[in-house]
Image (cartoon, rainbow, N blue to C red; front, side, top):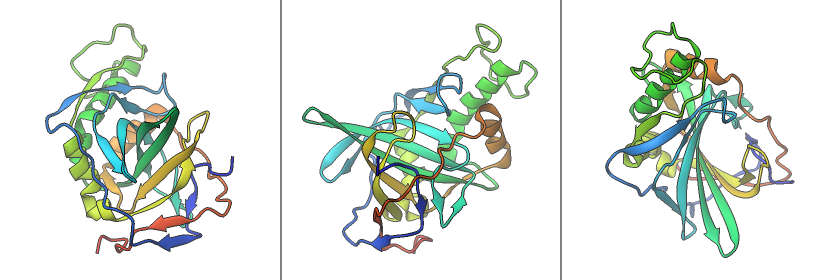
Length: 237
């Protein structure tokens, strides 16, 4: 296909004042999501998420959050340590359309608070793989080295504040026509890449990377596609 993701976000970027502010609508109270580990998926994935983001008048249902190491997208040729990809979908007649909102991860002194419960569950995976790991969760895996799917308390509204609210990301992003990055790499997906990276500590990043390694799909050809960006300054001004 000619609309594959990820791409290097550098060439053919145009500012568009018509791009809307982003918003997630979802439960105000935490609910149980499920963390799928690296033995089931290429990358750690939080599933059973709830909420919607409306794009071009179409409510897109939030489905999952995938943690990639390193980032799949590059900005001016440079990759970030990681990338969170929030996948959405909707039905239009007999067709299914997709939306993926990406947030970069960059090393910092703290980890974004909304990721705390997810990373606690990730530590549980580390415990199943290594019974001597410190800070293992209190539950015991059914079989050593089996891949369990622990529940995770997740708040869509907390994520909205921590992701879209960070650095004015709700109005500080780039977007282009792309695809999913996992087979069959379906095209016709709206890709939104938020400008301001989220913080993750070196310890938390090392934990994720040690479990799944390199999960980023290689850069794909841009093939003349236009990348649209908001008029907001890259640093949120």
